[in-house]
Image (cartoon, rainbow, N blue to C red; front, side, top):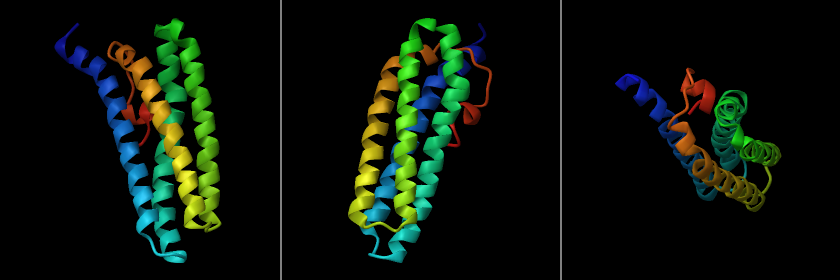
Length: 156
């Protein structure tokens, strides 16, 4: 294996960690927008902007994993089938929570309600990321997947 090939293989685990870090940062920015905003429409407009970006990025990340990364992992490591199904179930639950958050923002719900939605998304997201990293990072170090990281891990 050429040195460049090894670097590309190892990059999948680094790419996933980097994307997870950027999604954590996006959640933090969204939470800060809610905490620092003024009551009413001004805070809601800012939150709409941050929430849209965060929600779109998180959804894109999970859709890319379901579409490209998980099938490649399963093909190379069929023993991880149950882990991958569990991660896909998390994606479904997170998508449900994200949709509820987006609806709450669109309704201009109170900051307390919006904070609870963000807290729920954040808690499940963090639990999911930690589990995914524990179970998959070492596998990703050896995964031969010839694809664009943006297609596989989302827009971040």
